[in-house]
Image (tube, rainbow, N blue to C red):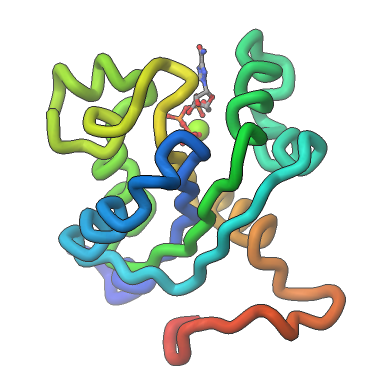
Length: 156
Ligand code: RTP
Ligand code: MG
């Protein structure tokens, strides 16, 4: 049985640069899934910021290509909230490789908007720990004035 707490699970979603022009369609998919967008921002990541965000992959052969890709244009970071949000969002985006995504479920986000194993349209946190770290990365709770930062009431 799902605990009440599951309904308020949060995850960090990122629309990668190649899919930012599909933001409206992606928001429709998020709404359809019953997830709530509780924070959002569009940002152009520096290479150093992208390296920090993807620190877990720093020793992977694809790391440099990944940084080229996610710094090529603005990304849209969102905190999503809902029942089992972490898994729900990963189910919605589909497998890492868009060609696998297309053979599994043509309706997933990567099936529809991904190009290849690197250019795959979206990111989703893979655990509660990474969700907390990644949400803090884009939406820091401490530090200098956050005059430009608003958030949904009653959600956090
Ligand atoms: P993400 O973290 O972005 O949600 O994706 P994921 O869990 O499905 O995949 P992960 O293994 O964490 O890889 C992070 C991102 O690195 C790029 N990648 N490129 N060329 C390659 O072999 C390769 N492998 C991974 C993708 O953009 C992937 O989403
Ligand atoms: Mg990952």
